[in-house]
Length: 205
Image (cartoon, rainbow, N blue to C red):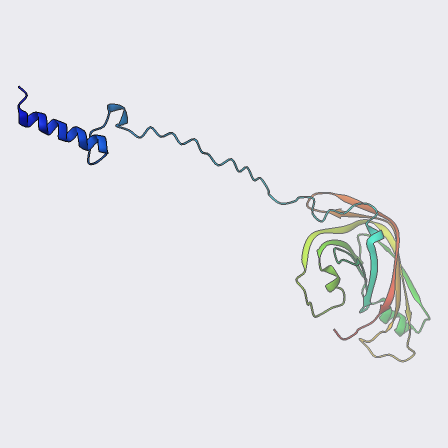
């Protein structure tokens, strides 16, 4: 039986629900959160690094326009932007030339062997040849070792009197049919012929 009191209470509750104030009743379909948020992250960034960075190509030697020599004997040539460097070293030939009193002295070299010959790629490599003070951060990308080929190194003393560990002079190395290999990838490049020449000796810095 609907009494005036029950009718008034029912009307009051209905008004509250209509206004959205304090109505806690909900449909059975609302018993669980049915919000199926389908917003998924579609960012498929697969950037794992450029695997081609620092890879040499045949003809790289055309970029090697700068030269630096020092010690007994070290010769380096590198690109103006410092991204590619070829380094060669063969120990003791200038000392031998001074000790024997000859005008010049040559030696034939096979690679790999007693001489060190490498091509490196990276950043600021021009900071490294014959330099004890590195002013910029040097970054190395790849190193290519000489795995075959020949070379002829010729040294010429420039002083009649010399002191041990001074050995000033000029040095020239002629490289022929050299193959360089990047060990990790097996990638190879060829150097048909190339000549490096500069003053050498032990210099400060």
